[in-house]
Length: 489
Ligand code: GLN
Image (cartoon, rainbow, N blue to C red; front, top):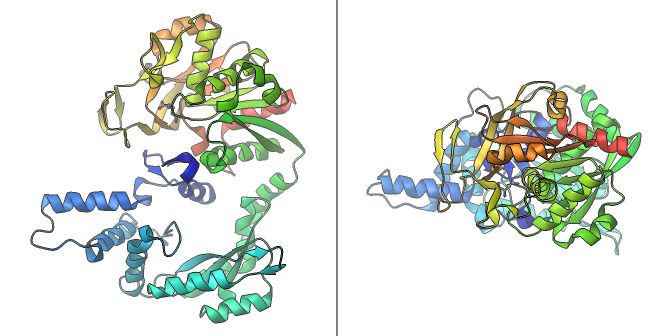
């Protein structure tokens, strides 16, 4: 998935690389997604072909219907245990070629296996034409028509819009789309995404869903926790600006969980966190002061490849020398180690083997490690897809370090997605240069967290803390980083 086209790759505890929507589900429900919660056409086809080669369909013609659709239905129904409700989202847009087998599969489910026990909620767009000063219901009507042409009549519509939908337009949508007016729910843009549950309740979405299932509903729902979050977001006591230095800054969805985590940290510190996006490809020593001179914190997020890497290293040098709070995530930690190696420890040619062969690989390819699946082996010629160090791994913190103080515990677990590691063989040299290895894998070979001794807040982590931050449980490192930025002012 190209981060600039598709947005972030969200990683689950078990190490599944998924669509960024899974991150929203985790943040909103507080429930960790599982590997079995996300599927792609590629996965379905790959499984289908493996089954066919194995002989599972001997003597039969393998087709999209029923074989692909059966696998999709199995995926939806599989592993649901004793859950009361399964929420199943089909990404994309009705009419997309890629989506057709998925729509056919849910059509069948709704009419057969789950008859009377399923509800179709369709998300549509109600655009506002500023020049004509009117809302257009046609795209919604057409989208529903398209859905009906493949056999699905939605029970509820969620209408995305910028402006309120007047009763007359709602009536029109209901009439043309075969729905009760109450089932046409306004999904208006909000000042903060965390207001959405409150607004949906006001619009009666929960009542409609329960009504469709024939279940009773209560008018009084406890939304106080959401109200408190919205309050903290909308009435901050101050603000702070953080520079995020990366190369995917043209599509900020590439950093979705990161943005949310900074917001959560803002909630915890009661400040608004503004993000200044800095394209690392255009950053060099001369431009550093101009680009970063006015920010209270600098963050280098995850990244891949040599493009823009030197710009990131410059940003890190700037943060270290000017004592600006610095937070390096994954690639941002690796580049921080290279920066200290080059500019403090005097290893001028320090680099990462991700950028090609080098004499001093401060960051190198990991070829062997233990995971929950057993011993993992990799080489430079291994398949690249799905073979990184993925998912939750334990990390042991060193007592007395900033990291240990922030977490308030000794053993933590965080999610990973990377192929390269900081090279433990340079530990002593880096320590001499003022770097502290404050978190290591339990066997002590993989550096997980580094920090700088003589700096107000300079921390790099090999994992992705942004995947675990929640509005009701902001991540301790993001909290600490934003608190340090507030202190700097
Ligand atoms: N490219 C680096 C690696 O593969 C960092 C990956 C990341 O930042 N997620 O190790």
